[in-house]
Image 1 (cartoon, chains in turn orange, yellow):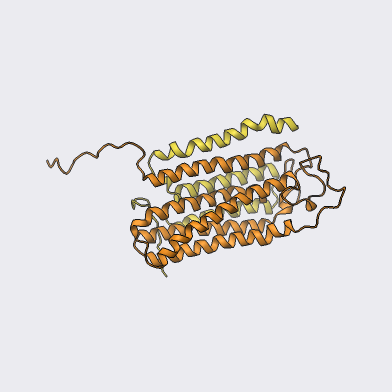
Image 2 (cartoon, chains in turn green, blue; image 1 turned 90 degrees about the vertical axis):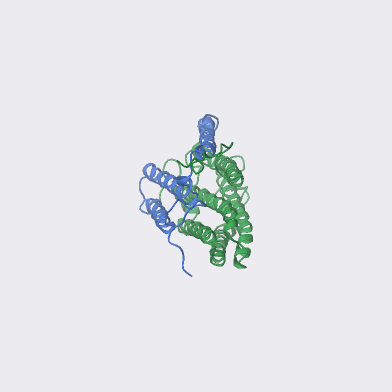
Length: 228
Length: 101
């Protein structure tokens, strides 16, 4: 029997993954708490609102736009998975094109959000004096006059949730631009696959957060029902 | 430009087709979208919406984030923050929801 070939694997401390991957998962764990707190806030205040004081967000936001942006982010996640595989196979230039397409989809997501959602809400004319009752933070005045971050609780939470998510998307785009440039120059070999995998994990997490934001903001009926 | 038809992790042990996962995710998104379009009664529609969101999240975690192919360490890192995030919401229910009602 060849004992040399059956030498036992040396025992090591810590999880069986690279330190970088471990660190990224720890970071994502903190992000779960970060977005978990915001999503929890939205759900709690939604349920706490007196009857008729929580807007039917399906009438404020366009579910078609939300579904479009969901598809855009899901497709971008597929592209980054394919890019990782191509890097592992030594196909840097092809991988670079997929990373570039991921970045382009991220930009489409931000542009759609900005043009179809943020700008129309933030450019609404200021509410008429007396209509907005600031003494009640749930839904003062008419909802279409208070769709700014300080207008009412729903609007504050909407801008906080989607704003922080957008900041994360921008962060991901900046991060992905480095491997995109290097890969397109054919300077991103298989030894860099671990690096792209970490960035991919982050990008998938951004996608994951949107998976919860989309139905919560665009599809869910207010407490007590609501109507179409 | 030809795209690969399957993906694997850094160790080459996990195989799945990302396009299949994408189709599943788009179908699930369509289900939650339709539950709003066809105006299902809100409590039932919200259940569908929550269920679909959790299913989609599990798909992304399992395949795109490779957790299906990782060993036991994943539970140590992933479960505690998720449990704490959910517990925090329930812990605040008496202070916020019951308080205003």
